[in-house]
Length: 225
Image (cartoon, rainbow, N blue to C red):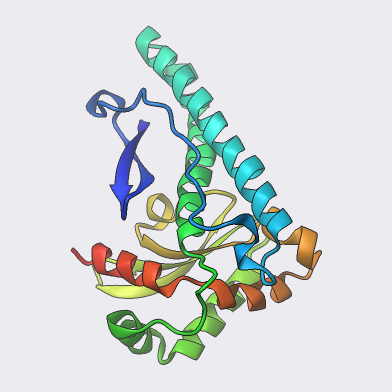
């Protein structure tokens, strides 16, 4: 399997597909620009965190993903199945890190916060009872992630319902659960430790003030097609 580029709302996302069926699989992945300045989410998320998170952590996933894909292509060309298998964890971890963060940056906005509007809000009320119940459920799930990982709001195309789920490490939501990712909350310590130390609940309380509900709503509309 290889990671192939897809376009979602003008931004790059990735999908695992058979290597021979992905004409752009040898194209290098790049670090997407933030749609706002590093300090734009202050005081809720500091400029220092955003700079390190984007320029160091996300950049490392992109770099290591490109390295893993190059090695995978070499192993594929040589017919080295053992090497191909051994590279799968690196592809999953770094590819997931790239996918997850590319969504995460667009899920945040300096003009975010509040509640969603329109169909997304109605769907949340239908599937969770109320926006506050949804918010409490996703927050509780985020707090409960053991070690490093993510909590997500996703869309189940089979049931046509919204669901929340948690994923360990950088496991991508869709590849792990089948849910289409709409809103991701990064609970790796590098996402909050410099500002909130080990008090994850304080970070989670703050992040709701910068959620970009317009972006989440756009993802919701696209997921239903």
